[in-house]
Length: 65
Image (tube, rainbow, N blue to C red; front, top):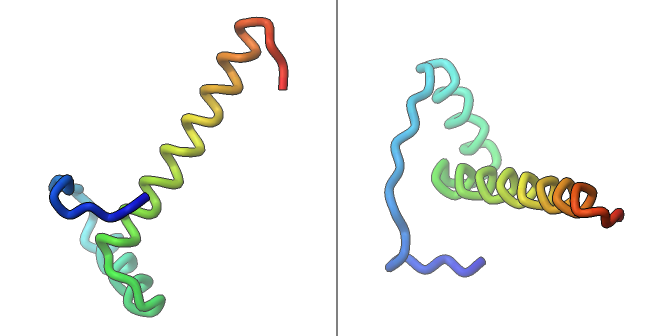
């Protein structure tokens, strides 16, 4: 997915201080920005969920994988 800054939106996520620190350290050790990693994780999760929902819809509709 291209990174089109004009279409970017801002979201706020509340984390415990400990989880934020762990995430920040993990991102720093991996050399990736926290925002970039959060986008990646959200994208992976939504794609997986959409694929699962499509499979369920096909089974309900009488089609099987």
